[in-house]
Length: 73
Image 1 (cartoon, helix red, strand yellow):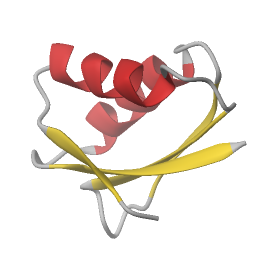
Image 2: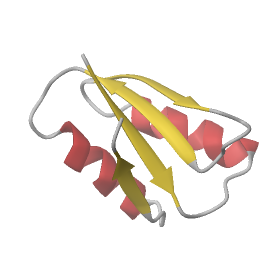
Image 3: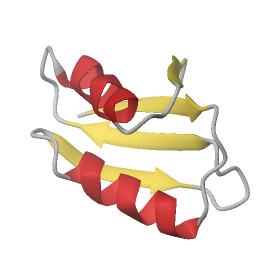
Image 4: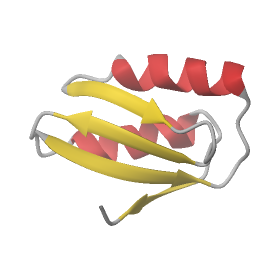
């Protein structure tokens, strides 16, 4: 199991965060998505080790109009 920390430039409200969590959880090999309500720009994504998951997640965020970067955990 791997974890990636993602920083999103845009400010997300509760509805946006809920929709984003659902969209990312639907990505194959993603096990869990967490967002701290005190730091709404940061997401933690837990996923099964698979070579393409980080790229797929960033692509999914980009297609939703979000600008994101992977942060070191």
